[in-house]
Length: 617
Image (cartoon, rainbow, N blue to C red):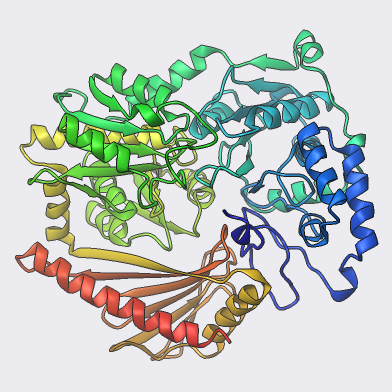
């Protein structure tokens, strides 16, 4: 079903020397020239060599079948390159060969990680590494291989007794003061995928230079068969493999509960919750029960971890149809709201009951607006810091300014939010909230990554406070818009699979830089920020200012009527994405203001998309 989309990537910063040919995921690019293309005999030779070293009978049989069928094109796709280690580790389709997620590759990557840790953090053998996994296919095996490799390198491994959420692994790194963490998950990707996410010793996802350093160490691993392994029994006897105590898990639950701002208000609310066949139910159920929220109804068909995700095509709460079963249950129990996590429970979706009884699914920006305002309004520190990404709503910035709070804007990805929050702590700032529009939220420094469990509880607390104040969460959102204006955003993704598609994406970005639009619809472009070069140009004055972002393949166009448009290639799919946000004063009627904003937003998005697409060829 997903084969065509799994052949390319737009991750990383592209340049003219880079050619396509690898699976999309959280990957980087491999430079190729015509001389690098493998001959048929090279492919066969590499595949046969891999077959001898592959430790998994299932992928061995899969590869042998491809060899028997002389499937040259498929072999070229799997052996023409390999999954590369990037800022979020690895992610790809499960299967045989170096351009797939499999046990052989996980062992090679784990050895590279071990070597880099030992070289970079001398106390790694004292601190150890936290390893967790979710409910996806082969997640337990990948975690077991990771531990066996790290143990063989003399590195202690702290493991959970079962599948866990991604935020719990990130929490475990800081709580245990570990040197690093590994979470085996592909988050909300389709069932065919798995991944390998790495946290540094600060509890945040790795950023440069560690991603490149680990990648170089992986490249230096000569062969899979050369990677030593330690049996789990021997590792346990030697104290190198340790099961994480349940007390750590309960401490996480206790600290999540402490994130509430108004626990004294009535918990008399009804929620429908779905983990979408993921691992979130245990943690959400615990924190809600212990926080006093008794009215939690779990979608039974999606309650338990199942890597096949039988009731959804994509286990992503943003996808159409993903919440259908939750909506059905909500109607039956007359729920106040629907809460949903993705399979590793680091994202949160919300749908709120409307006055007539139907449910409105909030956008990621709307959830971020509600949580951000609530946490700023009821801040427990005198020096709060809030943060979001360049493609998320600027309303958080306006609210922070009004509340006298510090505000930070980062590149797309929670790794940037978390690491920047850590840096600004030295300035005496207390990070209270961060979000990105793709349903990612975290409250405080408890988890230095997205935490769909903590966000779910704080959103429930917000709703309880609203009810205590005799209003609904939707009425609260309307109050925010009345004060700050309606901020509406939308994005359009242009999918261009294959090598020709990638060439079009590259050309489109190049042309947008060389021949940018002067106007978009009836609005004039007043500034252009190129995050690749790190400069922003004021069109009227010609003045050039420096940007503080790390280099990234993103363009931002600001318009004279206050809107902004961004263009960026996707980091996980063969797409280029366009983001538009507009602001409209309410002037007494929210519905009319929203209508004006939507009309302007749709017009800008259509106009810019047409202009950009005309530059592709």
